[in-house]
Image (cartoon, rainbow, N blue to C red; front, side, top):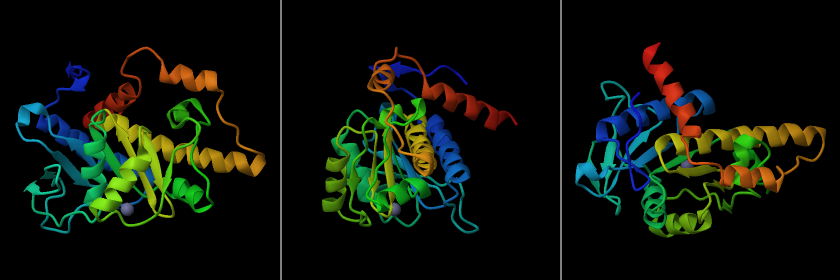
Length: 239
Ligand SMILES: [Zn+2]
């Protein structure tokens, strides 16, 4: 895999590379979360010339549908390309992309353990180094199907500057500077939720020390989680 090209901190990957990331990312989400519902979206690169994002369903359409089909939308949710039925919860993506210029990728899933925590009025917080990004706890939004601009806006405002949020009794959203970053923020969200529940069977799960949370917030620039992403993509492509 060639090194990531960056301009002003933003990925300069082309549409073809981003499509591969969406395909790889959705397959990873299904392998790990064992649920076919959900999507990954990524902003179109500048080189495309259009303003908007590509979105891939985790699930695949029935035959003879193209299992690699990816839809393209503008930021108002108008379909620019693709022919699948529009995702019910498209406002998740249009609202978050509008309010978070710092993120290039948004993911919505229904992770089992993280959702269970929300049903008990609990949230996911930093419990390990891998979950340091969740800090003192991510926000929780009501569990509505996010199928209107008003709900999308409400969810985006609740998410604020966090890297993830829970939808009570429904699922989660996670964001990232790249597809790999958003996938990582989704998978470690579920991992942290499971670890919190395991720890709670033995005692009270403890928040990671602030000095360790700060270490991860301020760690030197590098690929970090992306390195993991590339390693996995490399092996997936070469097996
Ligand atoms: Zn949902």
